[in-house]
Length: 79
Image (cartoon, rainbow, N blue to C red; front, side, top):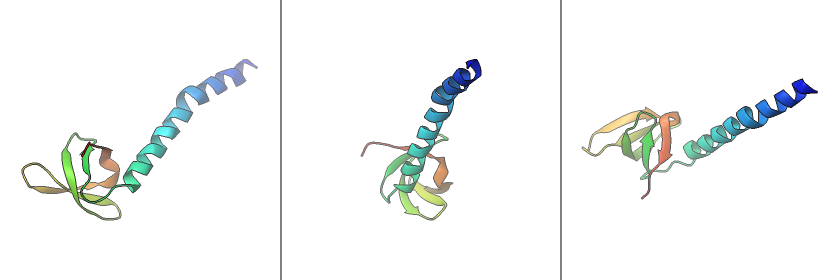
């Protein structure tokens, strides 16, 4: 009984929240559109100029563009 209780606590405190965060990130990555303002996991702010299957091209403030992996997008910024 004690082992089942420990496993249940482990599931609800560790595994389930991680799966939820992973699902939210997948939805974010698949919902990217040209013109969205985003931040990468490396802390780079930019605006999406083009999107391919596995990467996006960001335009940074100086006008330079850079190609990054779609999975490196950490979140969207306000418009």
